[in-house]
Length: 192
Image 1 (cartoon, rainbow, N blue to C red):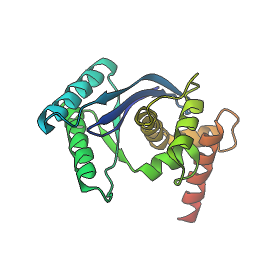
Image 2 (tube, one colour):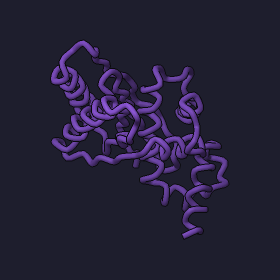
Image 3 (cartoon, helix red, strand yellow):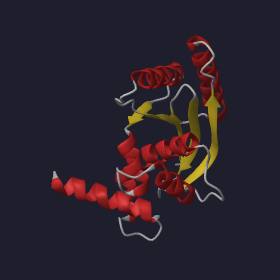
Image 4 (cartoon, one colour):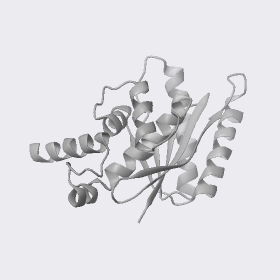
């Protein structure tokens, strides 16, 4: 069975959205990607409404099995954190109305999943997302690539136990990033 994940990199100015289908062997294919933008000059209620309507449309059009959202983390800029949290709430509520499960992933979890290192930069994430999804060009802006990375991360983590057991960390059917992730998961399990 193919798992369809809608990933969301929440934000008020740019909200990245990406849909990925992931097979049991962890092969990921991009279905759609985009960015919903709002202007800082608009009122907060209107900005959130634009995001809510866009998410509703994407959920209805692509019918994902699960929604993966970046977990809000503390930054020095409180107003940025508040905007991200508000956008996240709108997205999570839209999924909840449809009974779609929601998973939250930290930025370091996403970086580790797609690049093998939780300290990677945005360029590295974009480069590996492009490779994993076999795209001709990198998704732009970075918010779009981040949304796809979230979807990939969730699918690999959700199905990783079965995928690792059937294909193994050294399998040639996995990309280098997938092998690194599988090896890191196996190492973490052994350390417990």
